[in-house]
Image 1 (cartoon, one colour):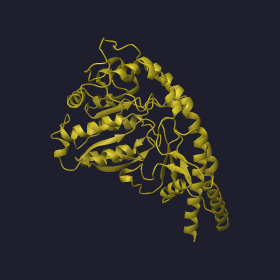
Image 2 (cartoon, rainbow, N blue to C red):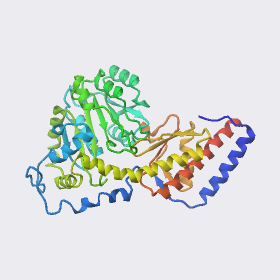
Image 3 (cartoon, helix red, strand yellow):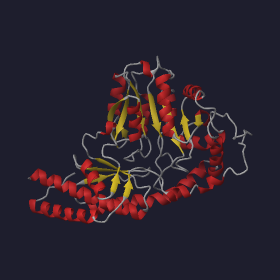
Image 4 (cartoon, rainbow, N blue to C red):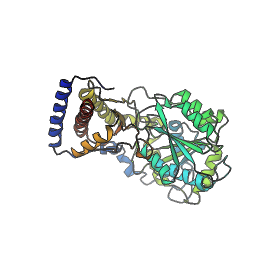
Length: 425
């Protein structure tokens, strides 16, 4: 990735980078690129939700949504998202507002009750482990850390996790109980899993009979181009391979409608659905069906979801284009970094020279630009190469985003040329 420079050229570039950083630090910026939150303008697209369901309080089958019950969620909402999430409506639950909450609950239930196919509760077994494709989603890793689940990093490729590594690990170690997957426009590098990867995940032999794929399809509808990525149907592939209970599918409307008042979904085999409902019945008498009804009325059908996401795309696409343009202008010919150009999702992954990510993030923070901590994309917050930085373009205004990315390129140049100068000296 680095470009060989003469001593004089390196000295000149370092002096320029130091001057640019001094100017950046003097601007008094206060910018935040830490999390992939929808911008206020994106949330405004769902403003009509706040006036719904109006005077209506019955679902399509006559259920009074104001009352208890309906653990599976409204059938009409499950029908809308069955296509989006590639799960038959009869095997899809519509629940609370957070898919992360569902992932948390599934781990807790697996620890404290016997999942279909298991010989005992996870908590009664020796230490268990999850495979963690890296770079990956920090909140997945936080859940493992919370419950003392060991994390085994697996490299990501352009087609998803390195399946040679995955297949070897799950075949030889019965302690490996699961794998985290963000299969479409993955967080943070934007990879969509190939059909071959999905087929291998579904059919691979596992030493643990209760192995589960935590299929976090968070960006199922979040396209940034005219040619949306398509991924294979994992649930169907697992059933065809004779591993019907292997997949836990998660999704939500959190980055579709109102992030704090969306609807989360869980899809799986009939046995897994029965297992989750039995456990959920001990903690809830039913989800917020009023919120589910307002989502039905607002989105209407799967085409309505697609139309709404086109409006989301109109707001997001210029931001991602700005990131690509500014990174190319500031770093394109330096050899100091490379980055992803995602076709969907919420993030751009920036890879700097080994040993530089933490220092880039520190210098950016000192200049008023707050980034996700370096290492957050890896288990235990430890990126062995100290090279990956996650960029979240969605929340700032376009003008603020441009300022932040321009400042980030200054920091990458400063740290990168400092490292080269130290090595040369």
